[in-house]
Structures are given as structure tokens and as C-alpha cells.
Length: 408
Image (cartoon, rainbow, N blue to C red; front, side, top):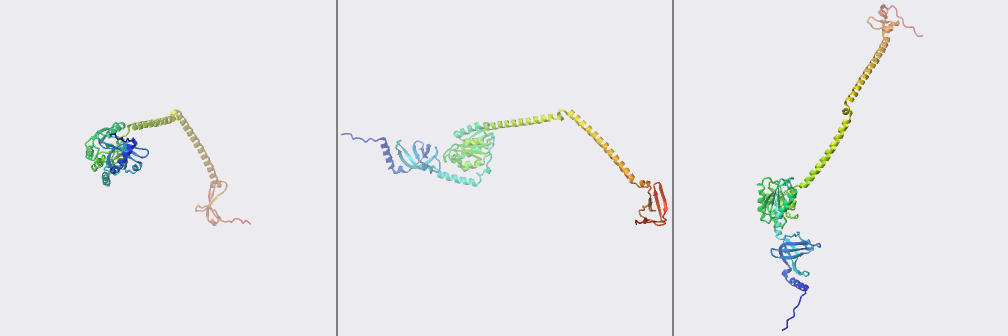
């Protein structure tokens, strides 16, 4: 019996055949798969390629641009997701893959609703208000670190703090930071802050993760423990896009553990630079002040009152003598002028006095009441009168009165 000739596939034919078989299976045309995202690559075209894996297997997946833009979240490596799509064969590489049409975070609906309910409740109580949040110390002497001893966050915290502010003492409070069961441990760690002497600020931190992994930080007890902590609390939970209830309650929310370490410390290198700059500016200002005072002192020393005090005093004494002499001369001159004026006034008064008139041959007639006779109408015939002359006076009796002759 002759051997029947077998059909030989080319690689392309085989891959296409397998693709056809898969396309005929209704289950594989619309299936949902749950797993962890890994090896995620975002192509420049907008397509996203990743591996969906669990503890023992993995599945290549492709999410094309239109579907990627419609997602309500940004998938990251390590995210737990549920995808929906079609299983097919990529002929060029001969590998089967899941072409994803929809993607959602695993358990997102329930967790997200619980998150929003808790957020509204605590916000209504005022736990998120900026007024209740405490300011961070500028130069903390002791910092408490609340994180997992084996997590990458601790390494980031230690490295950053030691490079920025090595003067700070660090105390580690081992804290569970993953999953909902971590909440009681986080509360206990926050309560231990009251038993430790000297911490001035606390950092609650962990690396990124899915919403389930961060759910412990959304617990009500954790939020209230942060609000009641004896020192300011900084949170550095997850990546920049991750927000938890703890972040809203914390006195300061940092996007990452490294950023939390930066917020808690001052940079000693920057402080040293500022100190050196301050010293330089101070020295320059002092130099200018000293130079100005030296110039002023030189000007003062150049003044005669300091450089030649005896000569200046002699000049002042000579000036005083000159002024005294001038005053004396002016006084004598003024005295002579006054005496001359008095003599002239005396001569003038003497020339105008009644005695001088009488000496020139005139007389004064007065009535018995000592009034001077200025008109003939003051006299009466037979009346008495006194005639005053330059050498004496005579009592007379009026015998006759004569009127002056008329002009015509």
C-alpha cells in the first residue's frame, strides 16, 4: 500500500489557518481575562502593548489607539486589570495575542465607590480643611519614618534625607503598607508617635501600586489617626497620579516617597550656599561702611579745629579783641554824637526861652492870677498887673488903655 502524500504548510499558511480556527470559536471572539499588567510599552502611534500575567502564565495583549484613548484610567505595569477582547494570531510572529477592546481596573467599581463615600464623609467633618493642617518644621532634629522595612520607599527616604539633611535623627516605625489589612497596622504606627521622644515630623510612605494595594490608606481609622497625630504628617504614597484619603488628611501631601523626604527637610547644600552668600554680602557691606567712615574721619581730621586747634583758638581770640575794640570805638563815637546833639538842643532851647527874650528888651505882663496878658481886652483901667523884665518885676496899675492905630 502506497504511503499517502501529506500536505505541507508554509509558516504563513499555518499561522493563517490557526487564526481562522480561533476566529470561528465564539468564546475566543469575546472573552474577559484578569491579570497583572507587565512589560507595558506605549508606541508613538498611540497603540499600547503589554503582557497580562498571573503567577504562572502570561498572555500578549495589544490595545490600539482608539480604545486606549477611551480608557478612564492610564494603565501602568503592575496594575491589576480585567480586559475584554478577541483572541487571535499575529501571523508575522506566529504568536497568539489578545486584541483588547475594553479595560478596567480590577475591583475598581466597588473600591472607587467606597473611596468617594469616605471622602465625602470626612470632608463634611472638616478633616481636609487647610486651616487645621500644621506647618512643617524647617530644620527637624528627628524624623519618624512609617513604612515597610523591606520596601523601596525606605531606601528612597533614607537616601534623600541623608543627602539633604544628615543632621536629622531618623527613627523607623515598621508599618504594613499594602492592601486593606494594612489599615490597623498603619493606625498602630501613628499611635506609636506618642511613645517616641522627640520626633518633630512623620513621613507615611510606600511605592506605587493598584487601588487594592493602596486601599489601606483609604480607611477611616487611618484618616482619623493622621488627624490626631502629635506631629505633622507627610504622606508620600504611590506615584504622582495616586491619591488616597490619607493624602487629603495629611498636613502635607507629596507625590512620591522621595518628594516626601524633600518636603520634610532643608537642603544643607543650599543652606550653606545661602550662608556663604550672606557672609559675602555682609563683608561687602561692612567694607563699604568702614571705607565711608574712614573718609568721614579723614575729612574731620583735616578740619582746622582738629588739625590746628591752638592756631584756630588764637584766630578766634584775635577776632574777639577786634570786635571789642570796634564796639568801644562805636560806643565812644556814639557818645560824642549824643553830646553834640544835646549841646545843640540846649542852645536852641536857650534861644527860645523867655529869659532870652527879656534880655533883648522885651517884658511880660501878668495878671494877679499869674496868667500872661496876651490881649488888651484882658486889662481894665485901675486894674493891677505885673510887668516882668530881665532884671526883675514891677507891680503897676492901669491908668489908660489904647487901641492900636487903624491901618488907614
